[in-house]
Length: 60
Image 1: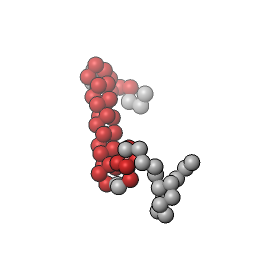
Image 2 (image 1 turned 45 degrees about the horizontal axis):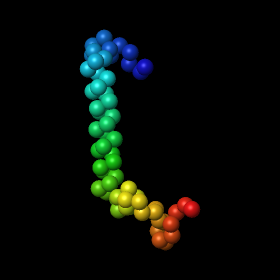
Image 3 (image 1 turned 135 degrees about the vertical axis):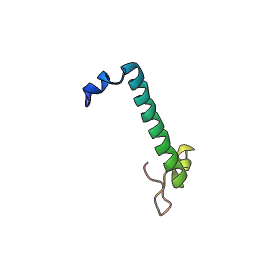
Image 4 (image 1 turned 90 degrees about the horizontal axis):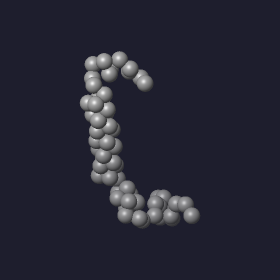
């Protein structure tokens, strides 16, 4: 554990859910940012194959 003394100040029953919630919110924000700032990510989630700049499908 990186900061073991933090549990002397914050109860684990409060700190652990807060840390897990922070990780979940961060992951959602990152995914939302990638989804809103790219054109290929939404297509990828909808099952379309990834393509390179020449329009050729990547992979097999």
